[in-house]
Length: 255
Image 1 (cartoon, rainbow, N blue to C red):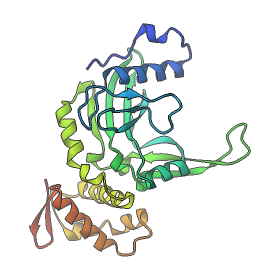
Image 2: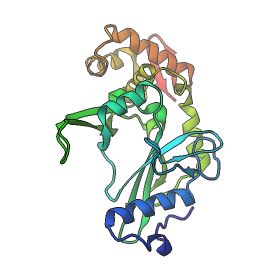
Image 3: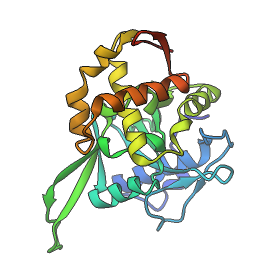
């Protein structure tokens, strides 16, 4: 994989900096990116009018949306229409997201992170205030992705500080949490949110430790009125899928 994006022949018809950035990042992705889900060697471009996704894998049919920035992605990502995103999540049609951080002084990919589609849930969507874009009379509500609510398994590094991560390691992390893929959107959100809480605990923890996040989880899932039972359900699911070990008497261990 070549991390250099610059291709002189690609830029012959572009002058605006925003156009140059879009063309170079998408061209690099199309040339160099493999499918992290099935390890197919190449991904394909969607037509320009495709909504919600930029690329797809012909082999496993996974879709990808690329977001690129010269600044490192930290706590949140600005996204599009709030209602559209909520609908995409609720109908299980979210693409996988790639977050690319590049240097534009020498046009090199510095970091590339994959957010698997089964980690995209309503808990991580922040509703923005209504706005009135120029030329529109109707109000518009956008949204942000709150990256700080993602567990580590929901942020898979493919390139880190210009170091290319072995693709088999990337694929193994994808497969580790793939059991979430076929579940209902609400199920995915609970698993992701409980896993995020667990990551803040010690390697060995007890049930009473995770119960301390009851109010936080209630804020994320206001329609659920039995939070502790839901926490226990998720711990069992994570145990059954070898994310946790149950060591007895309400005690757990992260694998």
